[in-house]
Structures are given as C-alpha cells and as structure tokens.
Image (cartoon, rainbow, N blue to C red):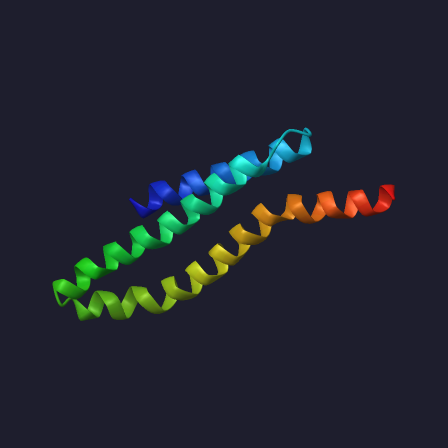
Length: 97
C-alpha cells in the first residue's frame, strides 16, 4: 500500500508543479501531494508494525535503518518540491513591485 501512496504522491507533486507552471491554482494539488506523502509514511509504519507483531527482528534490522533515512530524505524532498511554487510566486511578486 505504501508503494501505491508513494507513486500517487510523486504524480501529485508533478501535477502540482505543472499546474503552477501553466499559471493555474496549485494549492489543491499541493495539499493532495503532501497528504499522500503523509499517507505513504503512515502506510509504511503500519507495514513495519506487522513485522514487530510477528517478532521478525531480522527483517526489521535489515529494513528499518535504510528505510528511516530514505523516508526522511524523500519526505523532505516532497515538502520542498510542493512548497516551491509558493516561494517562486513570492519572488515573482517582489520583482513586480
């Protein structure tokens, strides 16, 4: 499930950047993309909790350290890309003044 949410989050982020580039309202796609990013992290956490309940410590030891870093990096990138239109819009307004 986390893979589906992740792919949808990437697609929504790309759509967010596209709507901004063509001059349309980008706030709803931005909210959807950030929500899907949060759902991706939650779904992965739920997936890992199954391994904890099964006491599959070797699987957790193999996956969690790398996945933890990956989720931090990917979530930070998602936030940055989805906030990019806001910063670009502000800088364009300052140039017009």
